[in-house]
Length: 29
Image (cartoon, rainbow, N blue to C red; front, side):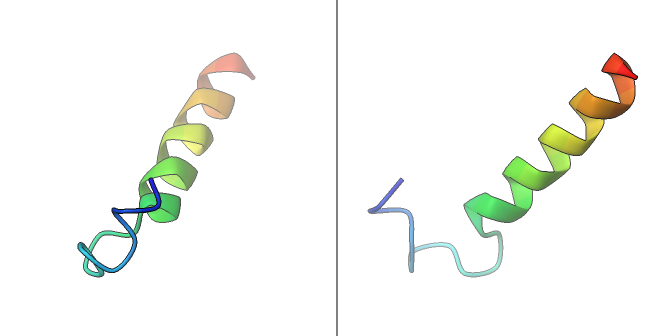
């Protein structure tokens, strides 16, 4: 995760994580 920072600024890991978490919450609820 640490090495990913700065390598792919176009697709931050937190953005992908937020999207996945949002989808998970929507399915759970």
